Image (cartoon, rainbow, N blue to C red):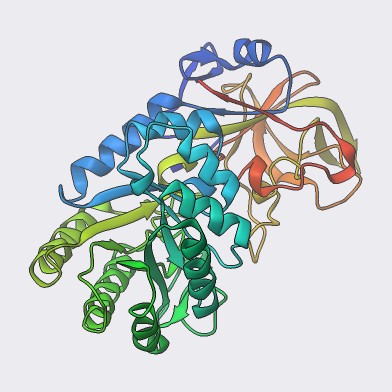
Length: 408
């Protein structure tokens, strides 16, 4: 990469002009993996990010990892020893989480459209169900009766406000997520008649936010709403998941989230929750913020060509592995993820576009980026790739092989 250093490169080291991942030179890592393309996740960076959060967040706040951000088994296993719990969004993710040392009662299951089979598995496992509707509550109660179990449940609340300036809004207005806040008191009354163990609430308003002031305002509103709803609950609140939404810098003008004020504000909210909901465990649920900056996507240049004055680096990977980097996963206006030629980090710079091998113009990983001059065989690196990579991409599109994944 050239020009002003992108914040995404913070902490990444080079040796002899070659990127180091987990202390391993990129070309040697590619040989070790045995193929390109691949995703590589740096375990030291994962640990450092959790350590950073521990230093800033209040001691009584439980830190959960949202497995959907990166469900690779080795990553989840590593994080099991670092975080306080997992949040899953499918039976597949639940299985991955249960294969770790994490206790089942520290795992929660959210997401609309849970099937009866998924509810059966979750209730049998003893994890916390985040109920998304009155209908899901009734199905869970019926399944629990058949199993002879009394599952712990929390209501996922769709608040009447949203997380402004977020990448994806998941609260406020009509939503497929959760129960509208104004309907929750009636649902709590129905829950009281069922053989369900009420645990508390889950409120998640949005994701990928870089504004500390907006996060703090939303967190305060979430706690206000939870305390108000608790007055209608059939039992004390023991589980209060206030979501996350912490963002990471993807683009040159992005400013890092200032964690300090967020941590101080959460300490104030934790004290308030301890006073008004004394039995509640306060939980923040983070995914992208924990894993996003710990990963890179690596693809090899298979052809270098020029078309009417524009250089194209044609690679063996693309949107089929990394849909987000192509701009087709949440971007309104396409912008380049931070990109480098990992085997020529200090070479002479040119303007080039990085494209994949798929027969579609959407297969664009970097558009007219300033990069060291690359040739066939060089390795292109897309940073900020630890979250929403292969599991969020159309791997079967056009029949190319999947990308490998490694934890280094």
